[in-house]
Figure 1 (cartoon, helix red, strand yellow):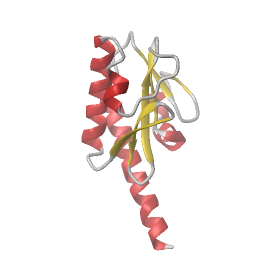
Figure 2: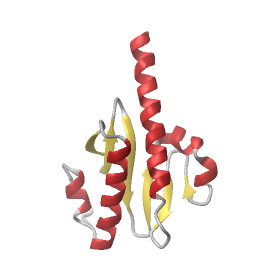
Figure 3: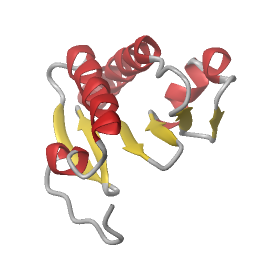
Figure 4: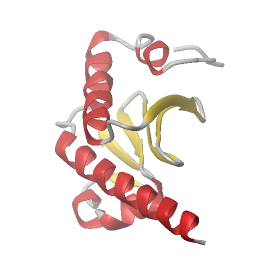
Length: 126
């Protein structure tokens, strides 16, 4: 991994990792795309990001875990299911030596899509 990466696409980000990690990242990307088909992809904060009327979710690979960043509301909504993982106010760490909870990632992403769409309606309603 580069010390000062400058990725332009999620694909460029993913290909820098060993094959096993690439497979996990691609699967997460696919799960998010399926849950948020209208979202666009970009790199934000040097991480793969899905955007739909605002940032939806970010994800990134680290030495021992996959970081998933659905903003604080995404963590709060699923706090019980996420409680078994390390995390912070807007982040969660999925250890690489455990199965990645792809269905949970899908459900959190669906929640974030609904949340962003509701926020957009509120903004337009003003």
